[in-house]
Length: 118
Image (tube, rainbow, N blue to C red):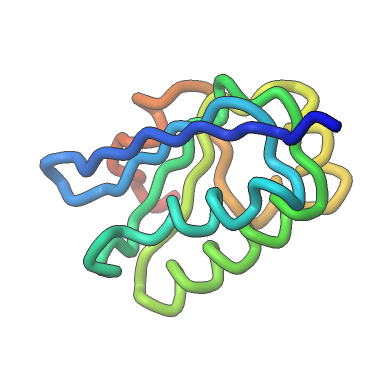
């Protein structure tokens, strides 16, 4: 039996944005790793960008983590943004309607750019 793997790299920008880059699969075996990655070491980063570029698979476990992370960020006056989401993951986000709740950006640079009110 093969266990899914998820690697995570994290950094904080000069503006205080927590950037999480993921590679691999997000499922029930890796959801805990994903969840922990979205919490800054001091718990203070209400602004987070998740770079999905190297994610090859995501199931409902990942959706649950995203919903909780978005709720937490908003409760702290922050936000969650997704960048470079592969088609397979994007299709899942659209099916469950998260694409209308969490902003999606084609590039990491777009996700990190200050957003202006329309």
